[in-house]
Image (tube, rainbow, N blue to C red; front, side):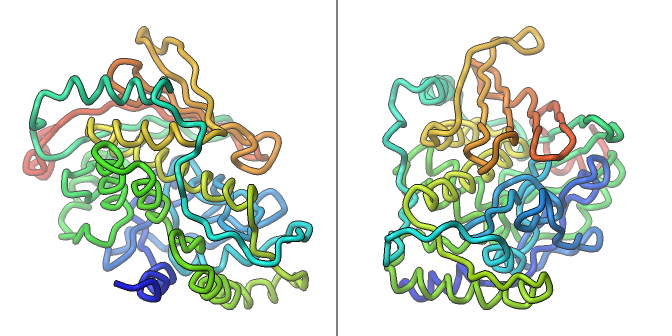
Length: 373
């Protein structure tokens, strides 16, 4: 596959059908989406404005990629809605002041120099690896996620993440079981790509794994491509967003970010993908290990020691600079010995605070289908 093939792949605009509208319903945010041929569980939410600038994938909190400048993306930890939406998003917000740079720097997704073997996250990742006792029981992880937030109804989501990378969700046991009647191919799904990227981070080249994890979301970075190929992607992104810009009455030219601004966008996307992977696929220790290694490369994420629910804990805080504003923040708390997610909290940016707590267990797909859980 040459770089033009990669560019074409990055610009694939096949819609991703929602996999998790129950979660969106209970927290009034976002909808989980997968690419490929997944059957839609509910109508896809419209892309709507959030916080006055930029556009949101279903009203979510992650900042956009390339010229959006709006805070868009995961909502309460849920992934991108559609590749087509991603291409629209990159061209729909106020551009930043011009810089003297005449040619955009070629993004690489390289690991931050601030990442070090002494990072608490790297230390915990090594502990998880050392605790590896061989094959896991069962062939899937079940996570029961309880959700609450100011001004929002409490809710629960059941999510089954199979070892093959397929994720099924439901608002209760019955809807989870019903959703499993449709056979799905994991190869083109974001949830599958989370697993591939995280496992590669656990066992291989961390810089390459960063690129894989970033590219689990449709984006216009063109990581690893030549400047010419990146320019091709950017032009197509602008074209995809032209109609929406016209509808908004936005006549200001969108500017392709460079330098620190571009790196911040890349790190924001990496955090979002890691956050989603940990929240939904964290029942697999190899995925936890890889995610921790990846997050250790993001300078805007701070790590502190604490306790949570009587457990020693590490608290990862994605601070406002990662989201491009002064208030947005996401906090992920994990067990300091196993890396197992305990809770996540999202706040700021004009959105209600949302809290999720997790109960993970290893199961078999056959037992879940039979209602034995």
